[in-house]
Each structure stands twice: as structure tokens, then as C-alpha cells.
Image: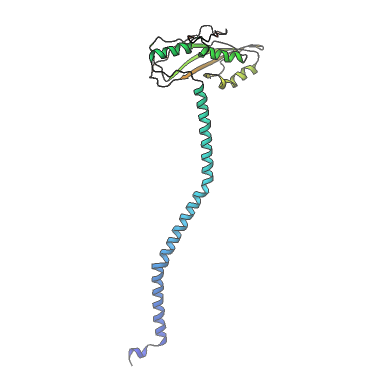
Length: 231
């Protein structure tokens, strides 16, 4: 009996099953599994993008906060620049003239501007000083500063606190570093106020700033009110 004669239906079914199993495994290895990997990768990408999208509202809030901080900082910087006198020249003679005008008794000088600010608000202050003008030619340092030993004669402690709260409106950039001691009793308090005035300059090489001297006519007495350009 030949080999073909001995092949039964069971043999055919077994061979067929093995063949289809092999084809199925090959199909899974070559087609389905790569597609499953692509699907997992796509799902991971979608989840990552969704995670980033979920962060968007927070990032938009951070951006809005950063913009608000920038606007606030710029406003403060502009307020500082608005307090700076026009000392921007690098010409020695013109610089000396600007400093004479700024340190002199004229209506726009630092001493007069500060005195008028305190007087207009009813503060009895003495000790306002400005640096002595240098001889020409002179160049400006990046920052000019000088110390003033202000003394406030106050009616009560409330007037002292009002002054400290209102320093941001002073028309020059002034830092009052605290109260060194209070003497007397209401309505006659003597309040020392250590203060420093800062002037920012531009286009200025680094040269030592002039030293402070007392400003003429500013020891608690009203300064001249002349509007002459020579002042």
C-alpha cells in the first residue's frame, strides 16, 4: 500500500492546522505586532500631547503674571526715571553747568525741589544738603549719591509715619534708611531721618562724584524762588 493510500482525513486536517497556525503566526509577527507597536507609540504621543495641552492654562496664567510683573516693574522704573534731573551730557563744560544748576538755589535744583516738597505737605524739615558743584570740565559717574542728615520736627508720631509712607512721591529718588532716634514729646518731636539721594546718569564715564556740602539757604528756610535760567 502506497504512502498516499495511508493518508487519512485526520492527517490532512493535522497538516492543514499546522499550515494555518504557521501562516497565522507569520501574519501576527509581520503585520499585527508592528501595527500594535505603532498603536502604542501613537497612544503615547497622544497622551503626551494631552498632558502638554493640560498644562496650557497654567502656562497662560504664568505668562499673564509675567506680563503683569513686567508692566509693574516698567512703571516703577519709569517713575524712577521721571525723578531724574537732565544730567545726560558728556561735554565737560555743559556737565559742569548742569551740575551748578542742579546743586544751586534755583527753582528746579534738587535742594529747592526737596525743600518745596516737604514744605508743601507741612513737614518742618531741616538738614537738606546737596553736593558742591565741581569746576569744569567734569564728567558724570553712572550714579551720583549723597547723604543728608534730615531732621523732622513733628507734632506727633502720626505725622512721622505719614512722612515715611509718602516717600515714593518725593520728586527725587530718596532712600530714608530709618529713624535713628526720637527726642522730645508731642507736639514737639525731633526725629532724625538719615536719607540718601540718588541721581542716575547716562553716557557717563566713571568719575568720582563730588562730596556733599550744605546747600545755601536751605537749612529749614524757604529757598529763593527766582525763575532765571542762571539759577
